[in-house]
Length: 382
Picture 1 (cartoon, rainbow, N blue to C red):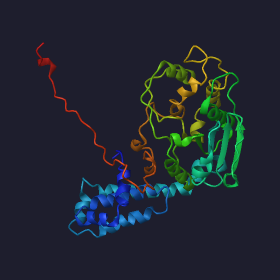
Picture 2 (cartoon, rainbow, N blue to C red):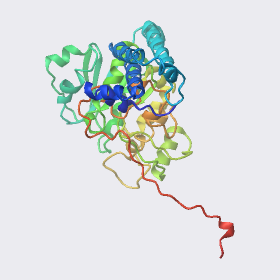
Picture 3 (cartoon, helix red, strand yellow):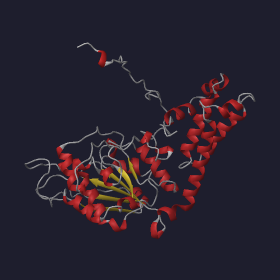
Picture 4 (spheres, rainbow, N blue to C red):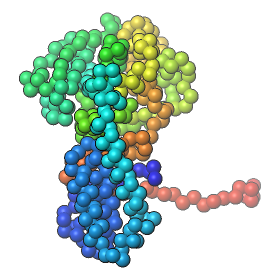
């Protein structure tokens, strides 16, 4: 309970060729196959229509068990079958309730659940919009670019007609000041749209694939489209920062939050995430205006370096603190270990649902151990 779910392993088992799965069943190893199908079914309930197919496969295997084996499966502690069935039923009921009440629970006064992609752009190629984002973005979603380098990128008609709007807003770095990177665009959006936010905003850099796995974003977007997504804050990138506490980070933290850091931070890296409007508005607009002044040239000195800098150290420090801005712990759990997340989002890559090649996946990592002899230092002769 509340441990990392073997989601990748479950998908691996369900995607084995049929003769391989039959070898499991014929050799008396039905339990791993049953639980694999049940876990995959549970992960698909909030976002796909074929969850029932996987659960039926599991139930058919159970029904085909010898009569003397069925009670063993029902009462086994090694394979908690009753708990697995209960989890599936609970997830099913939760998904149904969420879909029926999404507009009321998430849509605010207008009763509409909306989605907006915010992209901060400066000369990066944008072919990924049509290639990677358009196929997974719900039609009618909003797409807003904050153009930091004065460009007006062109998009094919297929992109323009897919999104509810596609707007390009100027957001230049301060004259003679340091480069504000994505922070300038993110904060310009948070301040400028504070009273008119989409229900969910996806904040992205203009080269998102450098840090983010699009299949993982796809899982979240499918849930948003189905009305089963209600995660207040979700980091989208794959890599993590090491636990960090530096004088620079401490200074920027105090400038943002009004107090020094209490402990090191260790969030997901590189500032791409989905945030719900109510989580953004948990802080007043003045809070975001203060953050914006750290990167828009209003603050004409650098908290981390005595001289002139070309790239905002304030923005780099914010990369370590966005999760704190939106109410997360100093060191949030890995997504795989985060029991607050729905099953399909408790994954590192998010391609477990669509992966066809598994040769490069380490399903059961071997953790090296060093056996250290216990020493009673009170008895050591000095």
